[in-house]
Length: 273
Image 1 (spheres, rainbow, N blue to C red):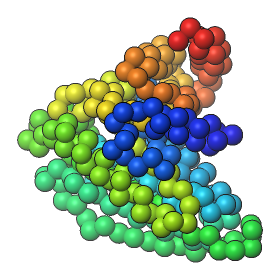
Image 2: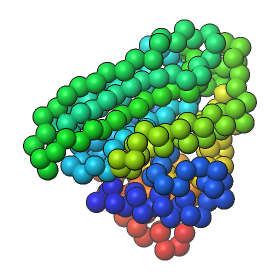
Image 3: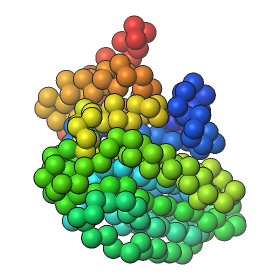
């Protein structure tokens, strides 16, 4: 159900976005924003990727996960987390082959980047009686060693990156991702941001503004902790004011029923948006 909803939202946004004319229109592509840091953006991305790769049908044949900005690298790598964890989540599924690759494309020069690694694992297939080859590609575009906000890490390490360079490389990676499916099915793409919706990028530009040009349909990972209702609604409205379409709000249940209040509030306020 969620997958069908996200697909409709992606196609509608691609048709209405002016910048998206420079991006591939054939693949569902989503930005994953968070109400704050540590709310579970990477867990949600991993769950979505695993769910897509577990599907019985040939579509989607590939999932591309992009992390444009990563700090605390290489000790902390969200792309590495998906690379390690998603195959284990897919293992009980009907996928015959999962090829997982991890690649850091253009990290800050202060970071020593390991050679791209690739691993293939075979899985039993008992679904439709034929082999299905699935591909997961995980990539980090820019990375810094210190585990702080990108603007602070870039300043301290003397490795700043202009907004235009981030957007240009992201657009190129999204375009190159079209080749992952090799005509065998759809390629779904996830772009996970860093920190919260209004967390600064390496130049100091807020990430909600940095990626605004793409106008990608958005999955907002809310905050289930105390104070999370306010933070989630603030993040939600910040995205709406900048023209984003929020396709889904997902949050961890921390026993405070934040999800129930948010569901009621967003349903009742939708008609006034």
